[in-house]
Image (cartoon, rainbow, N blue to C red; front, side, top):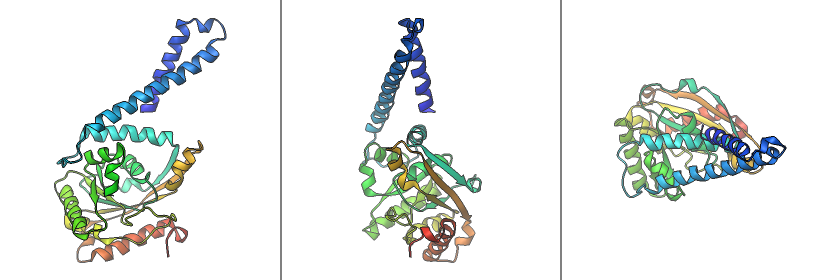
Length: 276
């Protein structure tokens, strides 16, 4: 939508310039129109980026967010759509109709690249996802502040006590109906593109909050930025493999839940995309 609006405005500007300088009376419009279009688009792109930078610069990372921000949620939605268009991600989805229409849930997904949260936010845009993310991501330019306003929670993967605090915070976010939680149970992006073993503690969120687990897989996201730099589109697979209802999470351990979810993802990805 954002890029489309920018393109239309650039086209109108190019037309107006051609009319103003009488370029249509000859063949001058053949170079005036494209040069003006590109220039206008570049200016609008700069304005859009400056606006995003300005609103994010006002975010105080030291101040804990008590609720999801509709303004920043909408902002993220608009800019994420533009980003996916720019990088030419061609996403083929399956099973998204299983997404719970009412109530909160815990979404779990394999992790291949920095583009994974972008794709999930776009395709689950009505679910108000708040991600559990490593602490280092909070310092990322613009992204860290956007995440903060979307109730994303950082986790210290090297300190169990601090990690538990994050888990409890996420449980409360769901119970208080502020957002659904999304997490990558592998803990890290996969270096070889294969599904790795899970850190099972995150599954306690669904157990304690008494919500379903939405199991999702992604394929081919690791090459999106590489392909985009070469102006090449990327075919991405996003599958909602299944939904585990809360009643099936009772009386079992987090490790057992993790093993079940891992099997679901592995069956969908296939043996070639699962680590030994």
